[in-house]
Image 1 (cartoon, rainbow, N blue to C red):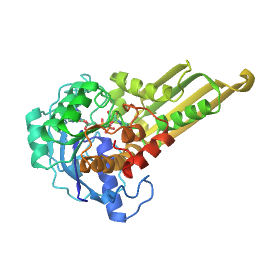
Image 2: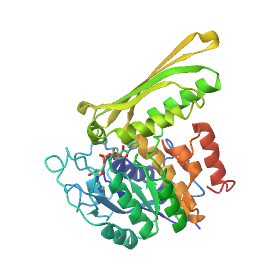
Image 3: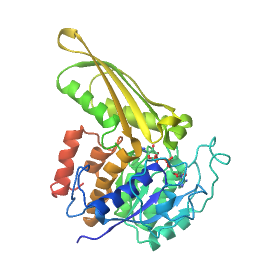
Image 4: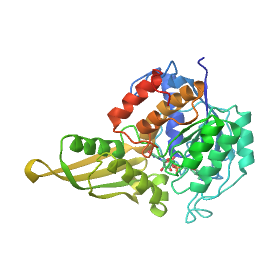
Length: 354
Ligand SMILES: NC(=O)c1ccc[n+]([C@@H]2O[C@H](COP(=O)([O-])OP(=O)(O)OC[C@H]3O[C@@H](n4cnc5c(N)ncnc54)[C@H](O)[C@@H]3O)[C@@H](O)[C@H]2O)c1
């Protein structure tokens, strides 16, 4: 039976800002352009309700979510005023959430215990917890995954920590009868999905890939954090590209290069691919992409939340393989975008169980 989708957020940064604004935008305009799915089994974007939020940045904690999303250092563009949500941002466990170089002087912190997060998730009657913590926050992400398990809610790992691809976490969510999605969102039209699509095409057309690189710069706090901690992000991005060309060895260099402040919420990506076609004759491809990174993330998250709610309604336990392959850079099972899309359609129509 259709009901609201009660969503809690860990990490009230730029992605949370774009997501909360986006839900308000579609609610206010009744528009349905700019999204892959107008409806998912009857669920519309309007069914998404935010019920709890956690952060450790003292400038955001204690504010209503509608206000915290516009608090610096967040710099995602504002497209709409957000109605008061009556969701006060609560503190969570800090652990490795913020890069040591940024704690204290740059980011004033306040923290709480996992038990507090569990209590809050339960009292807010949460269906789904999204993990939007900075890259490199493996232990803090695990703390939120544990809170989700204890509170009995589905978990969406939107960032590169190893959760949905960890056999240990997969087993725990399966045992608890709860759905799990991740790792690291593959944006609606970001560098990863575009690069993957080109690589897959080369493979289908029989070309031999010699090497490829992808260089990313942006002006968000996400990129500032990546200045210090980019290992897991390099891994999820590189794996996503390599898995589109199975059976070939080739060089890759895929990385977030730098924080470039004046770009604000924008990200610029440059991709280059060198390959050999018929009779070894060279082919070179160069692509540039500019996107508003957090908005690109929210554009796929509105689908993820509705698909996870369908998984909850059907009692799916553990990884939802189809949705993960469609919407995440490092899913438990990789597939090219068109094949993953078919899996999602089959899942929605009940022809696949997960
Ligand atoms: N921007 C994109 O398009 C995109 C795409 C895919 C994945 N991601 C990933 O999503 C994550 C979030 O991105 P963002 O742009 O919103 O980052 P952000 O830096 O704007 O926000 C992160 C938030 O998490 C908070 N935080 C840090 N430690 C915490 C803790 N222990 N508990 C609770 N809150 C904590 C920070 O204070 C901040 O508010 C990043 O890991 C990013 O790599 C982003």
